[in-house]
Length: 205
Image (cartoon, rainbow, N blue to C red):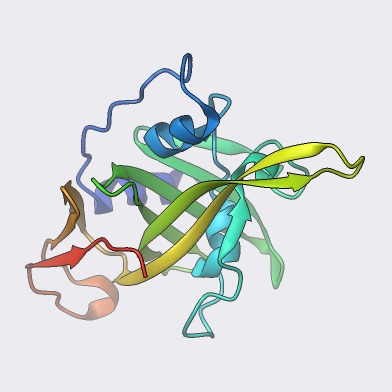
C-alpha cells in the first residue's frame, strides 16, 4: 500500500491546489471547489465503478454517481487515505483476495465553465498503475428518499475520459476552458515514452 502511494506521488508532479473551507459554501459549490461533501473527500472508488476498473470495455457503463450518497456509504466504506494531494482507497481484489485493488485521484480543479478535472490511477494489484483524466459535471438534482421526503442529490457525471497510460508521468493544468496535459518522458513497461504536451478543450456535449 505504501509502495503504491509513493509510486503515485513519484509519477505526478505535485500542483498546488488550494483547499477552501467548506464553511459558508453551498453543497454544490463545496463539491465543485474542493471535491468534498460535508468536508469529507469523495470516495476514490467511484472512479473504479465509473470505468477505471473496467479495462475490458472501451467506454464507461456507469457514468453518474450521487456523490452525496456515496460519501460515508457502506458501498464505499473502505478506508480512505490522503497522501499529499492524492486521495486513495484500496480493497482486496475480487478476483484474487491476496492482491489489493487500489483507486486514487488528484483533484485538479474547475474550468471556467464549471467542469471538474480529475486525474485518477487504478491498480488491480499487479505492477500496472493505469492513469486517466476525467472531465466531469457536478449538478444538484431533486429526488425523493426512501421515506418520500425531498432530497437533493449531488450528481457527478463523467462526460469525457482520456487514458494517460500505464505509470504515466506528467502534470495537468487548467487555463480557462483548456486542459493542458504535459507528459514527461519515461520507460513504463519497457517502452520509451517521449515528452509531449496536449491541449484538450473542456466543453459540454
